[in-house]
Image (cartoon, rainbow, N blue to C red; front, side):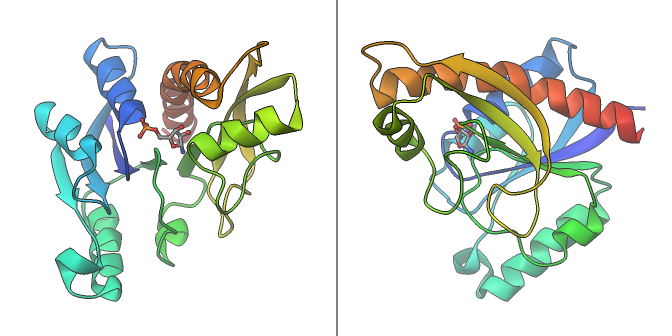
Length: 196
Ligand code: GRF
């Protein structure tokens, strides 16, 4: 039976799009039950709607208080039969209780080889700027289980991307992002298979 996943995003949603595309081509047997963004302007919400997926802007603003937003997120997970929760560029800490509802089933994608170049404040171009400033020759993509600390849960999958001479944060970031798009769906597929 096709299992239900849900996706949390804050920004452009290109990783969400990659999941949608792989479901449409039949590579990934999953149904995206809903997409939540804490940011009403997130292009991810637009991408979800276009694909016929319920797209929800959920924040302290929309719900009145952050506690009310947290409660709504917990009920969306509990009441809708979600098997796996994917954080794809989600810039907010998860409310307490989510990890208990879905133990070992909440994953995050990070645009570097954790545990290097991770943690609070390490997002977007800042990651690739730090990689170039440090002069490492290899960076990549990490998918890990989410824990209570930023970017610290057990690592599930990594892919390596070579830093090239003359790379800018932008050029490196776009090569890493392309690898992210080809990596996230594989981990979702394998995780769904493991918990089936
Ligand atoms: C990706 O680089 C992801 O690794 C990070 O945030 C970015 C999200 O990009 N967590 P997008 O919104 O999927 O385009």
